Image (tube, rainbow over the protein chains, first blue to last red):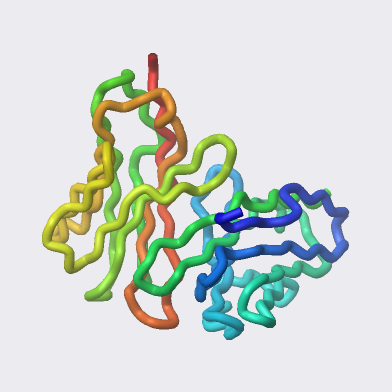
Length: 113
Length: 116
């Protein structure tokens, strides 16, 4: 497909489990972003890559959150020892460059029980 | 730091009427971009329109236009001739136009409901 894809679309985890969320950006898009959206709120920035370089991770809420983009394409957001407050929709977005809009994927809805 | 304020949590509008969604922003940056996104109940974020801080004309995209008033730091979205399919959550967002600082800052959103 031509858009940003994310998998899984839904994830239920028991508290304390580790989860991995995947993002496939639009082909050729240099920038990749992760956002967290709590219910009824706007998305909040987590982290951002230019190709494989993680340029900003200031939004990651704790050291349990880790993101990578080793080959400058697919990215994985990993959450270790999940907590109930991690329950949210995790959105991935990509853009061609800093002058263009970000295109969002459908999101992964994470529920931590 | 950047901040986006959307003061209308929800709006109800009759079909075919025009609607204005309010957005004010705060930034100390000179070069920035303003965006509007639509989020239907299905959850995906759909890009609607973009305005650069140095653009002299207001942006337009089909039925969408952005009423940009730089001195007032406002970037209101105007939807003309509203349709039932416009019912969704609408977010205003901004970012600095600066390499290495491309993250979007979002407002809290306005839920628009179009009434037949």
